[in-house]
Every structure is written in structure tokens, then in C-alpha cells.
Image (cartoon, rainbow, N blue to C red; front, side, top):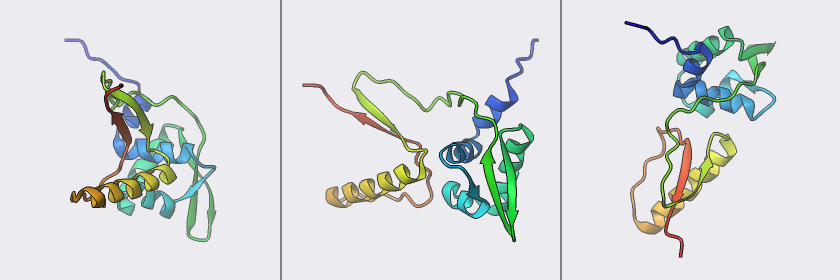
Amino acid sequence: MARIHADPVSTSLMHPTRRALYVALLQADEYTTVQLQEIVGVDRYNLYHHLKKLESLGLVMNHRDQGRTRWWCVIDRVPLPNDGSATSSENSLGSIDLSNPRVQAAARTMLRDLADLSGTTLNLESVTLQSLEITGRKN
């Protein structure tokens, strides 16, 4: 029986938390550990576990410490592997990537407003939004 060995960088970036950390760091020059924790929404132990994995692969580094604050940045930009979340649909009008924290915050606000208008209950507190697919019919 043959074994297939995947690229460790691609395999690592398939994990949702590591992917979110890496994408966040790609969007900025640097983030502190506390900022990254707020962006990805994991506890400190898990955050460090995933940052150390990305660091061991040479993707990110803790490039400076200021007091007790650690600053992280990307040191190697690699293409993100397809995580299978992209779906094509005949009715798809487009897709919005929500990996940028500012775009994700705007999407959360918009979705809450739409839920309120429609009388729908929508709990977005414990989820990480990844993309928004717009579907419809072309007239």
C-alpha cells in the first residue's frame, strides 16, 4: 500500500485556526498575541500551539517583544491551499472573502441587521466567518 505524503506547509494551512492566523498576518505588518487571539477567537494555549506550528514551518515569527507583548509577522508568503470551502454554483453571483478582520466585522454587522429586519435569530458570537457567497438569478 502506497502512502501519500502531503506538503507540511499546505497541510498546516488547511487547519482553520492556523489558516486564519496566517491570513490575518498577511493582511497586516504585524499583530500582537492579544490581537491575534481576538481575531481567531481561541484561548491563549491553542493560539500559541498554532503560532509555534506556523513558526516551525518558517511561515511566521515572533519578531519583537515589548515588555510582555509579543509581536508576530509573516516571514514567508506562500499560496493558500484550497480548503474545499469554495463551491461553484450556477446561481453564484460572487463571493466575498472575509479573512480580513475589518471585512469580517462589517459582514457581521450587515448579517445582524438583515437578521433583525427579517425577524431571524442568528448567533454569530462563537463562529469565524470565512466567506460570503451571493446567489441569485440573473434576469
